[in-house]
Image (cartoon, rainbow, N blue to C red; front, side, top):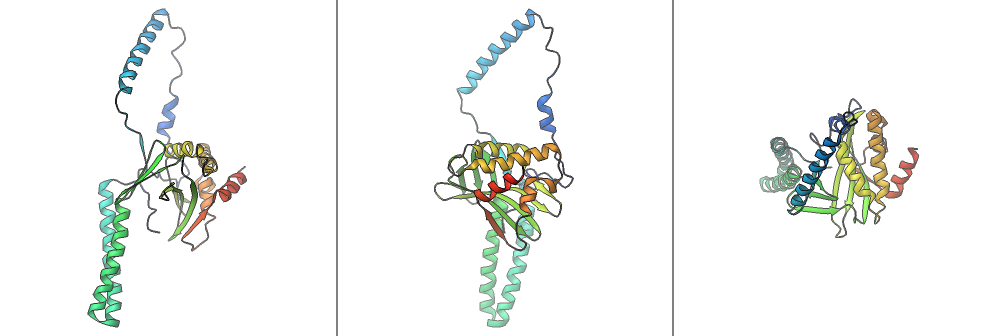
Length: 272
């Protein structure tokens, strides 16, 4: 596989079996101090509410930027480092293949083979370095050399993709648009009993969007993500979470395997 390598900001480490929930904990901080307020406080609250309404009306008049939730991406510095390391590997592979071809057919064929190998592998490396995926409202956007957009609500085809590359198992959503353009969203990468998973907010927004998809029965995939979120909320270890368990179903040595909606539905039902 050439693509799945989400790292850093969007796939927090789950080797210890827990996520940091700083933002979630902060959502429920209001508790005391509301009882025993007088009429003056009520008037102040009404005035503040009126001011808020005026502010909201003014804000609605302008163009509202859609919220972006990063699903796959790295900072520019890390992308440059990975691209440089990948290009070094490309040069070594091209030299090796070109050397073998040169021993067999001479200098000319050797250079041709080296050039072809370098061009093909270099394109793959640079595509991965440029690749970014994010969620805008309910649309998944992937950008590399160009841009590709798939609406999760109207997508006619959704599949779960399991891949096994060098001992790392990746669980991804493969979403295909009506124009037959596909975008892959990596949900988790596991190696051994640990790994990295997509953040809680991203999983929640994906689950919400998929639940409204009736073209490809997206509710089944939404239920899988909800089960993953519940497992994380309970503090389950990585090996006990649904995404890890379904990743373990990928056969050894098989580069990629697609799970249809029916297969995912049976798996979700088995979770109880």
